[in-house]
Length: 77
Image 1 (cartoon, one colour):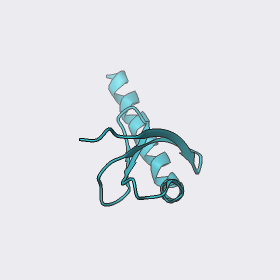
Image 2: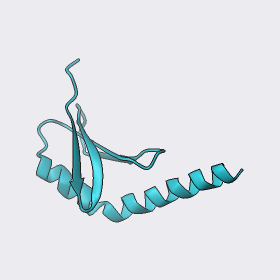
Image 3: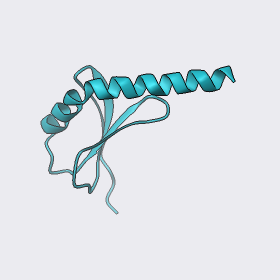
Image 4: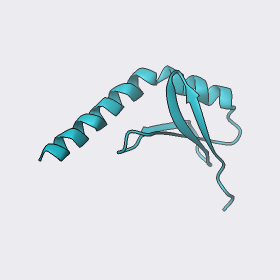
């Protein structure tokens, strides 16, 4: 398996990690620690990935808020 290329990027005010993988679509996820990760095929331009992340900025912020609330609730217990 080839090594994956990883980049730190920012788009639409969202800092994220871009990983190049063999995937069909651009995948976007908010991890349990609130960090944002995107994966895309090597043939997808960085500009296209940035535009996708920027278009999903509202969703990312709400997902990060849910993650923070969940962590806060777990810490209170």
